[in-house]
Image (tube, rainbow, N blue to C red; front, side):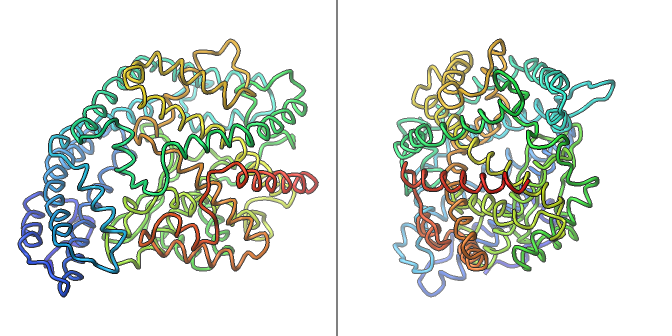
Length: 571
């Protein structure tokens, strides 16, 4: 339906609003019927793909080069001058298809999500959404500029992390304190930014006619299948089932280290061997061995990753003025994923790349879905998107040894897998802490707007979910740890997804322990559905259960602990 749309990244990046507007007008003016609805949706999808790719490429550049003013200028131009106008026009298209009353049998979930978006759209929020994105960029700049001077060498946070794996506790403590001191130097800056975030979000919810920002976020994130109370049920289940399991892990760590308590700098050091795992020497080695592992899981995954290597879709090293963290994003027109991370030469890098690889393969598999609104990562439920990534970590775990083209000896692989399973257990309480913190913030927006009260609440929740880490004498470090959790700042309410998905991923892994080939086949089938079915149906397609309850959680915590005992004998 739409003609002469650019298809190369270079041409898409040059698009201005004047290039988009005629295509929107054509879609608005077309009389929508059941006969032309498919072509109309495909035309809208083509337009949406270009907007999405332009935004994504500009955003990626801001995270790769946080100090580049020209990149920042181009990104701001898009979010200030193109994106607001496109949102107004997209709202018209949403209203057009919803008012038409057409029941499109192959677009049921797409319509449901468009209705949710249309309901919360308000033009009064357009400038506020731009402001929020600018605050995100400012937050990334603050964290991206943080470096530590270590023995005469300037290091990023990711480059400091290997020091926390050193056997000498004095080195670990010194490195931890140095990194924390740098973070605390930005305490006032992050707290000041937080007040701005909250003012913007409270106003967004008010403009949208929502009782609070959480209600807005629930609609924005298409959470049709669970409620805030379900989240709190999950928090309680974690407190009842997982926190005791995490305490058992920490107690074992305490005995192995021969210490009276586990301090923050004791959490990551390997307690099973004298030397920390060093999986690779170069980024090219990390890439090639990861490709070989993916191939073992399924040959198609190896092909996908090779494509990413060939097309320069991986930015894996750590450097100054690069934003922290890791992500996978999708370029809508080329249907290609892009992986961003900060390597540190540790096993954590392997896990991160396996994780982001799962996201990338989800993009490849769902690329067959024709409509943007049932294919884009903006519309695929994050609770299942994270199953794609977390399950890949576990599906790949049997192949990380050198025998399969991976990184480790058999004994080292057992250690790595054991640490991974321990990490799953200890992650759930932290996830519950982050999610419970966000519920408190937006249930109590006045107190939640006060960063000092936030610090106190974070500390209180830390003691509820993670009492086994000894922060005595380090209270400021504990209180401000939320400053470094970018989801709280950049993507509010995005964290429970990890906890839900981890339970789903462990179920995929449990199926794989019985029949790896069949588990991978169901996993791929579910990935290929995009968001054409509901969240519980996606879980069902993968052969797993969508759940929050204590009983289900205990079943799989017990399985993890059982497998950990076996691995302890192999290491």
